Length: 496
Image 1 (cartoon, rainbow, N blue to C red):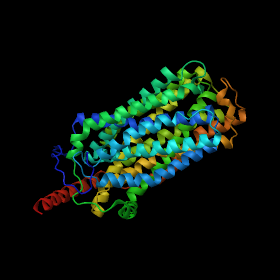
Image 2: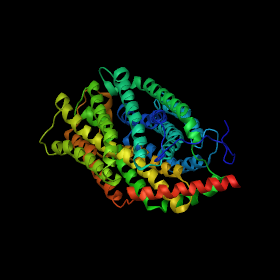
Image 3: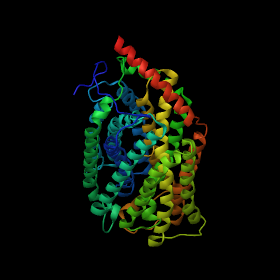
Image 4: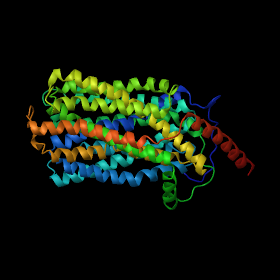
């Protein structure tokens, strides 16, 4: 398979619905399967955090530092990957070749991440975590960034883009349910649950294999449609010389800046909450291993409910309004149980805590569903606005920004969680003792870091998002103008 930037490759015409570009349901289905890479990466991230801090005993600061280093790699690699996929021309389109490189490498590095050699010193364990986490993030980006950009290109209608994101999100929910079910049905069962060190390597390689299988199935199912989509009309300049100018160009668009920074802050808040989930479930709420998965299912059920709700809402309201509802539905539940626990009004444990955790998590899931569906479709609208304003297509860079911001959930948020554990002096030996009791002072700090701090960050993200200005009328005007421009470009290319 040749991947070239300047080879003229014929492609079949893309299916066009009378209202605009619209992929068939089969393409959307296979596209949704590819979400297993991103969702699988995020699902295992909370296991990794608990594994390295509570089970292997590595300090939260070292774990946080390792994740910060991997984030620096992402900051450098994501724009390169996005620009690369923007300029590729091949018989498979401009996105799939990059995705096919990233998927198998993601599997290998994810398996190694869960398999550190025995008897490593803390420093060497830190090095192992840093290198394997860098590998997972980089190679997952090679799949996810062109994958997200492809979703933005598959349709050009205001609501249809939200439907495509809904398909993708549903695929991610199914993947997350599968991974959670595998974890707590076959691996972290019985006495000790998540505290069993010996089962983590087998779990890691199993999930890595599931991710690779899903990625390959997705690529096989969508390649014909992907090949039919527009490719670059002119050969691109070499990547490194052109990239700084392209980055400056996308940050000139206020819509991109707003979406990028609001997603970065929201994802960091979600990442902080998720990083401390297992610690609070085990040491504060004292849930049994088999019941932890019920809370995870509640989050996924809420997100699932958001999939049909969001397109219905978008028929009656602007995407901006739906986003603000999503922020509200996340912020309020994150504060309920921590507030009650901090004030000493309600301190349930075990079976008594489970209904409260399930209820609040379900509401957070609905709000997250609104955000996760609406924001990527808004990024596609912003990418159209960019082409309209600057005359260049930058979907890959736009979705590399979205991908980087989203992975802050596995980076910056988890880094904050690691620092928080050390600041509150969380006992490192607690993870190796089944039924360990944590001092009440530490419990109080842990519950606030798990709930109030993420809620505060989420409020900041909502405030950053407020100036966003692309509405339905604006997007339809841009789409109509781009259809005329692209038709003219094609005619000019054929005549030349």
